[in-house]
Length: 75
Image (cartoon, rainbow, N blue to C red):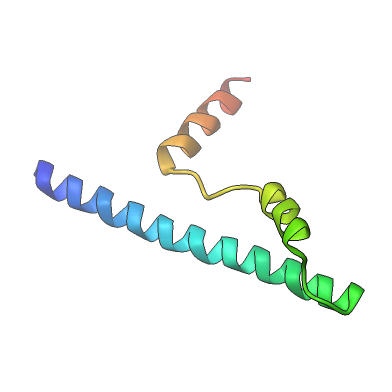
């Protein structure tokens, strides 16, 4: 049973990693498109660095979501 839980946790982690990778790529693609639309050119290395710095972050694990939800409920 523990092996089954470990495999499920590993599969969840892999799915989350793939999702986060797609979300980061979409975020950067949107920034690049916005730059081309507004400025008529792609992002410079410096601009890209600032964009990456502003990336809001990856999707948290369920445990993190549960902890946040329970503290909000008690407030």
